[in-house]
Amino acid sequence: MAIVLGDNRYGKAETRLVRVDRSGGRHRITDLSVTTTLAGDLAATHLSGDNAGVLPTDSQKNAVYAFARGGVGEIEDFALRLARYFVDSQPAIERARVAVEQYGWDRIGLDGGPAPHSFVRTAGTRTATATYDGTAQVTSGVSDLVVLNTTGSSFAGYARDAYTTLPEAADRILATALTARWRHARTEHGDWATSHRESVRHLLEAFADTDSRSLQQTLYAMGERVLQRRPEVAEIRLSLPNRHHFLLDLAPFGLDNPGEVFYAADRPYGLIEGTVLRDDAPPAGLAWG
Image 1: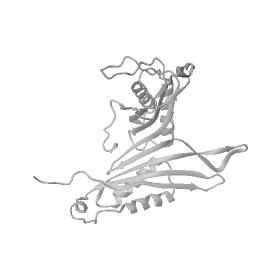
Image 2 (image 1 turned 90 degrees about the vertical axis):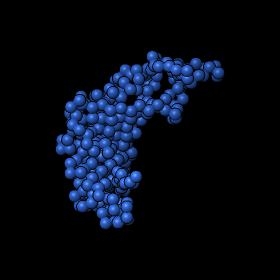
Image 3 (image 1 turned 120 degrees about the vertical axis):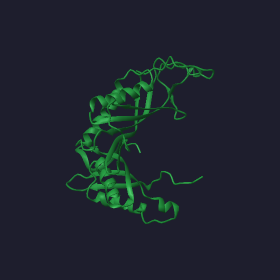
Image 4 (image 1 turned 60 degrees about the vertical axis):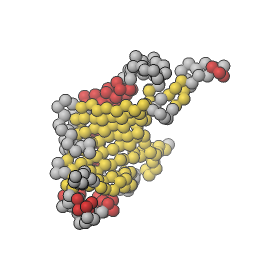
């Protein structure tokens, strides 16, 4: 029996970066968490401790900061620049993956207009991942975007077994913390910001206007809407934790409850995940890792 080294990678996780653009009279914030992951001809460091091909993770962190000095731009482009740099500059590195989370900030409104240098965090986190091994793949996304419908959702007609106690619901609150990632058919479509903004808009509109009989149905409707409206998107993967809201029985207190008072449970929760894609989507390659 032979023992061999399998798939391996290494990198720097969650490098925090805040860049303040002070040009002009109104400041602009870019707030990121960047994770770099490198792979390639790294057998020597695992088998004998020879680190000649290992770019230190501290150097990867420093590259993130140095690249940010010249401006970040759209996070998809920033991730692509870093991924290409690591592969092109390091002989032992054959593949780089750079994942970026961007935390949004809006200007605080004042009576005289938006404050020039005061901000409040926005909902949800924008994400992007670039993978490069001589060719590039890019995914964009959003995470922890909490949405809720107070009506227009039901759940009935499901399978039952000896342990089923859940009552059917003709009308219920539907809430989730959306995580979605979508794969671009190509990496030079030109406008990452518009693509991201519009993809999120279509996700939210589909959530709002789908008469949902299951969270699975809502998931598909959201993915389908993005693919119908955004031709640059080839595939979308969604994760929807079901944030249950249970109608409380107030009868012991001599009170009715006409669908107004709920207990919001945080766990356990249902977790609905799925992929929606074009039947002619190009191969994903290394896009998903």
